[in-house]
Image 1 (cartoon, rainbow, N blue to C red):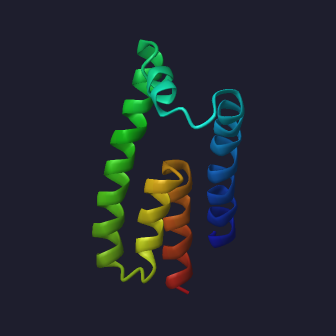
Image 2: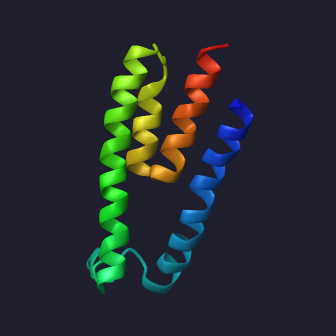
Image 3: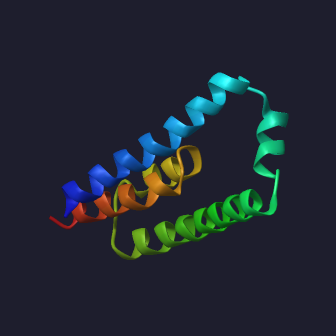
Length: 102
């Protein structure tokens, strides 16, 4: 299972950042435009709020479950969640947990 989790973590980083890369090419590092686009309509607000809440829940889960199961490098999964995203953080944490249990 560890290799599947690792592949999903890589895909969870690549696909969202590919879409973000297109936005960056079109808009540059325009933070005000990023925030405006994120709040442009109810569906985009729903998506962002969903991701934020999922990210907070995932960080709490990693802290608690990682401590209970002695996942040594769990801090990297938290850092990945906060810098790359939930789609990377969850499978990466599961990869670390699975790897530690072997």
